[in-house]
Length: 396
Image (cartoon, rainbow, N blue to C red; front, side):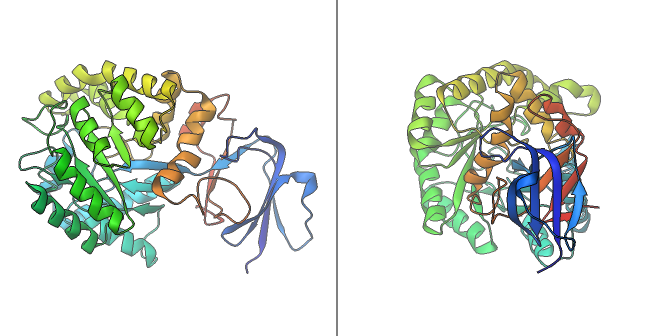
């Protein structure tokens, strides 16, 4: 047991959805939250280190459910990735881990690596060789031959081949199986709305993951592909650009999460061809942007469980700007409290880590942020985090 630390005087947003605790106190014992409540209610002695955070706000660390940690957010990240050495890619990934942590992301889910470098990075983190947030990995994405993400994925066709591909990822150490149900913006020659892997193909990948106690996620932008994945038993839909009322109702009934990644097309359009982004990606983003926002609004109003994810690593989608997604979600009609829940409690539930992470409660891991302002009043304060605590320790 290490020396206890007591942070006092802050507004505490616990991430549970309950009203903030004013003049709150947080007592940390090693990496664990020992006590939480109003400052005057928590008894301390002279052996406890006291940190006065009066006037600040404390909330759980952000959880980003859709990251590509080894991808560099340049104009054409895929081109860079497949041309550079694996050593440089790994070093890039380690640097990106620190960017996430310093900006307030204390846990994330990687949604597609390259040559299992994501899995090796996770091992390095566990061994203390590098510093960063905890994270889940998916290994290679499962895609049809020539399908979205094929340069970095595992191409597979037919149920037997998809089943084998899913088993390969699990064997390599994947925590989650990522399945490409539709085309996408960043792969040339494919349409974002077009279905790719079939419902039957997706279903066997889901079966293999669930047998192993793992979850699944699908890149799914077009309506038919989204329905295929939901009917196949998928756990989360990534992007969800073309959602209709029927599939939204299916997602609510089955408890399927939506990870919108609103910032991905936003930054592609903002920086455009002048930023070195391929013209096909810019044009496709322009075509889908408004549908993307409307689908998000409809899903939110209908009660779909929404978790925060950015698609960090896509063009100009920086690894230290995750909170920009929360800003866009609020601008699109989500309440600031629901936006915070999407990156804390709801995100932890999606990732299956809610027993230890996602909320500030006694007995949970002390991953939290100190903010200059209350994000319920100004969500943009999360773009400039004052301090990050990971496992009860201040991140230097």
